[in-house]
Image (cartoon, rainbow, N blue to C red; front, top):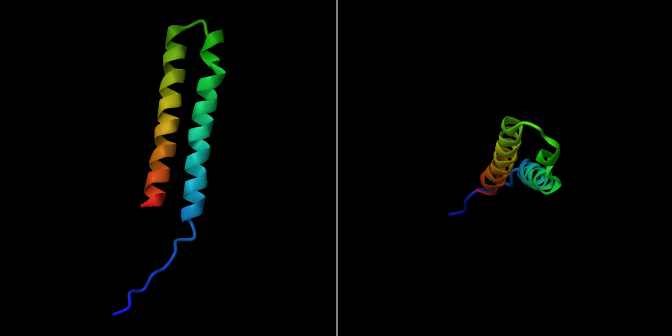
Length: 66
């Protein structure tokens, strides 16, 4: 019995977007924007934003790959 296989045209878009989000998060982390922040709360929010961005990107790559 033959199975019908199809390729998702949006898979590559999801992969590229996820990789871009991971690279943006890592670039922000390397750029150390908190070095100029005066407030500890601002530093914590920036770090949380970096972690969330990398997690969303990795999740999107994983979801697109499945």
